[in-house]
Length: 350
Figure 1 (cartoon, rainbow, N blue to C red):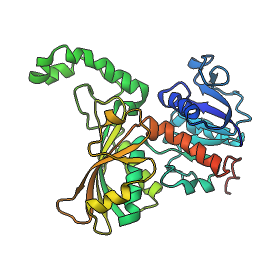
Figure 2 (cartoon, helix red, strand yellow):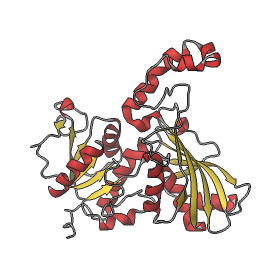
Figure 3 (cartoon, rainbow, N blue to C red):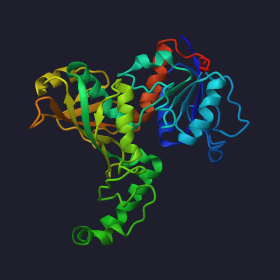
Figure 4 (cartoon, one colour):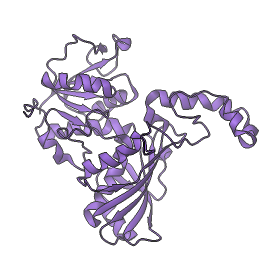
């Protein structure tokens, strides 16, 4: 069995920490795991790694790695992923930097692992919200021919990283101190706490905006649902009408999906094609809390559309730190290993 020297970039963040846990939990064949992070974290010891955290700065020694798993943000990935690739590593990146690059596979391991066969040294992990939708939509597309989706997400604070969770948690004590005020003067309650990560006070609230707005009134988070879904499913004409909402949940994204198909669909047939799909379970009442810390994506509330016999409604839940980020990254590394694809990048096209 091959054994790999692995660089873990962004090792001290929420996703990086979970990547490290998954590498060990799943027994990935790594001879070394070397952590990289910002200068602020340099020298910090991390259990389960070979040596303390190294600073990712100009002049850092990045030679001799077979794999580099990234969760360090888009700007870091744009700068450093090509450097690791050129030094001989295959990069699996968890940021938005490479997802829509036509030269870079965008992969959910249960859905389109074959996309890895033509990798050129960098592989992208999808957005965590897109990720949880892909498993049931792939199964249903195979059976009924997916043509359009209306996804409405209910995204956890953890989608904004550790800072997002910290901000939510810090808001609760002040708001819970005056229960009556939450009922009779919500605006005053809202103003008792500050917010910097989320667009508004999130505790005891729902915020219907996350990401940067464009001229059409959609956010970049919503456009990820459109663009990444089309690429992963291989459906460039898929019609997508997305809405992304932040909810006061620590971990676990939920998405209500109205899916429209080429062929007529009924609940019994849909359940049959969804049952047994890898990485996914059926649950009559899936909730983010119930699936926090679980690897599976859960699908429930299957309903025939009230007006269209070629449409189906479903509710999907998944842990955004696990399948939505760290777990899929490690699963990509596993598939690269299983297929003998941990190799130097192919030369760039002229």
